[in-house]
Image (cartoon, rainbow, N blue to C red):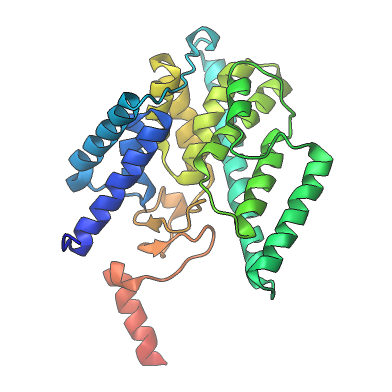
Length: 311
């Protein structure tokens, strides 16, 4: 309508993601950084930094003026001292959260491929998916329906949860989205992370509230490749004293998943590490698959042209 060019449209997408995240979760700074991180792995566009932060703050204040109330979970009294031993426990938790994120991504990829390859109308796929969800509900109960926001709040306040709650929530979310359901994954990721953190802490006799709060941000960092936004969100939701622990679990989880993502539209602009170096830079993640977009990379464009000539 306003005759924006393609670059302006991309900037508006960043602003929209920032505003949506900030207004829904009450985290304006994390929302702005999440919008900058989630579109490209390994690159942040500073030319849209001002617009992203402005959108996040304005959306957050607008939501407050409209009467929306947010939940915060200060965990300072539950945090351990940052000793070498506790640092190693935090590092181990980050590895576990990365594996949980990887599990989520791979199960999502498998399920979507299975439903995609199923030669049946969409309505039949929906019925099959619904039957599978009901079968799972018969086995584990219906407490994993919906966003599980109440369950997340309960876990973050020390409530008891099944040690496999994170896996049941992954399966519920994956089946819903794969068979035709529509919805976001961020809030389910929060419950998956919190319940995974509580399970980790319970198994090793650690503080469940502390590790549940770190799981919330750690699984988000791994699943969405957004370690900076996850760390900042920990500060906004959990308090500043949680920052060192949140940073460790977020970056560790981010590295564990490699070049995978729960968002298939993410573009890989730069490898996370020389140990994970890949040639598919400039391509969509498509979870563990890649879709070529050679026009985004001079090297890929040259290789693509050579392949065409060879054919």
